[in-house]
Length: 409
Image (cartoon, rainbow, N blue to C red; front, top):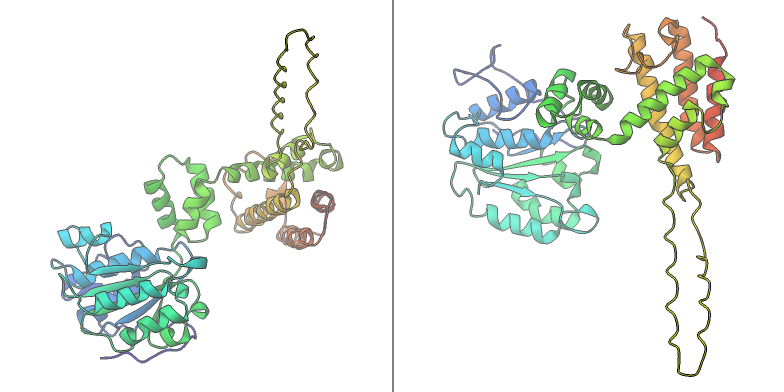
């Protein structure tokens, strides 16, 4: 049964007509190999596959880092696995090769052209390969990652194949944005929403893939990533995150202590943390110029005194990088992001971000909901103001000073 075509509107789910219960073909459904979360999408596709009604072209759409590529590998296992059809076992030689990325019946079409696009030659080569597929198993899977990297030429090279697929040919198109896909491709595919992961799953993924990350930093990355395991892994290994957390601690302390802490100068805790977050440090000393080689002394002539070394034409001022405003704006954006998340955690009745409440001498935990909302609004205004103001530090000082004034409870 061919599924109806869908345009570039909101993704739809695949209807589940089976009775309640997570069973596929009489066997308990344990999930596609390697896939965490996305239970409803997995069940819907597994049931359609077991009935022989799986759409030949699926668009897996969801935020960055939520596991779309992992989902595609798991679905490829379900299509090819001889041991557990429609599910995949993850243990047989076929599944192992699929998961390792070296199965001849799974073709990954990735950007290889200029500006991160999929070239026309790659798309044509894929078209030729699928014309003789499958090679070993019952199906041939083409994964396009990302689908919005298909330009008009590359899309046209695949259009006929997607429009009139041969038996056993399946396309999995991955994207974060349906609007970025070619309408001609999207209209012939079925979108499937791959949503954000639960915080417990994201935390487990970090603990498995990056066991060296401390628990406190892992919890922070989970909160900031908002259901994206890929983003959480990036944050957990980002050394600038701890520097921005220290800036948040000092900003909270400065708001409580008042103007003396805010305008304490570069050697105060607040602005030491600021310089560290911005990346301003002492510049490396310029190498001393080598003295000129002495001129050879000719017979009967006196040697000339050595000339003084010339000063370098231009010396970089320490702590004044050319892109300082951009670095400062990035630090303020990260600061406001962390601060607002800290306050929202408190509005949920929690202590705030891990490692912030304990290290910051602040009375924010006793603030009323109205005061927390007022602070969030001030931080949002700060983020907007620094984009158009030249003096980023002065803008930050003004906001911190405003936050020292008690507002209505």
